[in-house]
Length: 133
Ligand SMILES: [Fe+2]
Image 1 (cartoon, protein in one colour):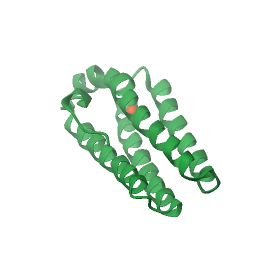
Image 2 (image 1 turned 135 degrees about the vertical axis):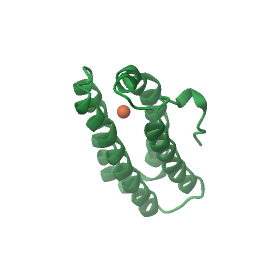
Image 3 (image 1 turned 45 degrees about the vertical axis):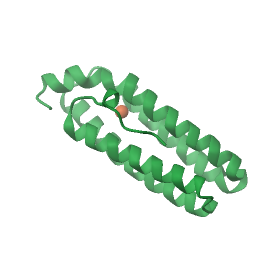
């Protein structure tokens, strides 16, 4: 499980709330895997996770556009690559079985933590300067 801690905070409440929800949803997929839920169920949860991720990415990206954030293109690409990768995992899940489910979950955990710590934190200064808190 991923546990939210203050180190993940970007100090902007709408983003922190969405990140917490994102973590909760990923934990839901992790729990399903631990409980040996069917691959169909895991795929369904992954698809829900992806929909949530997409909406969350749109929240961030619309602020980036509004505030003319200089690293928008790069950031948007990271989001896009994430969605693309999850799509391709979903396509292969049924044939890849639980071994692939394990790999996917490992990827999700690492990606989210790395993305929040590395890429998201870079927009804090810009977002705060433009009035978010
Ligand atoms: Fe992001």
